[in-house]
Length: 121
Image (cartoon, rainbow, N blue to C red; front, side):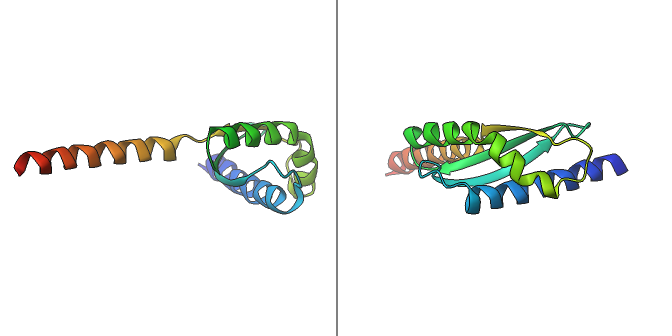
C-alpha cells in the first residue's frame, strides 16, 4: 500500500510541475489553453503518462499535440530539479477524450428528453 501512495504522490508532483512549466515557461503561441486532467506513473516511476484537454476545435488539438510532443525534452529538463527519484521519467502526452464523451452523452440525453416532450404534446 505504501508503494501505491508513493506513486500517487509522484504523479501529483509531476502534474503540478508540468502544469506550471506549460503555463509559465512554454512560450509556443500554438500551445492553446491546456488543462492537465491526470497523470499516471508506471510502478517503476520511469514513464509518466500525462492526459490533457485543450480549449478549441480539432485543428487546435492537433497544434497542441504537436507542441507538447515537440517540447517533451524541454519540459523534462524543467521538471528535473523537482524530481527526487533516480530516473527522470519519460513523458507521454495523450488527449483526454473523457470530456468529449461526456458532452456527447449529455447531448444524446437532451435529444431523447426533447423527443419525449414533443411526443407528449
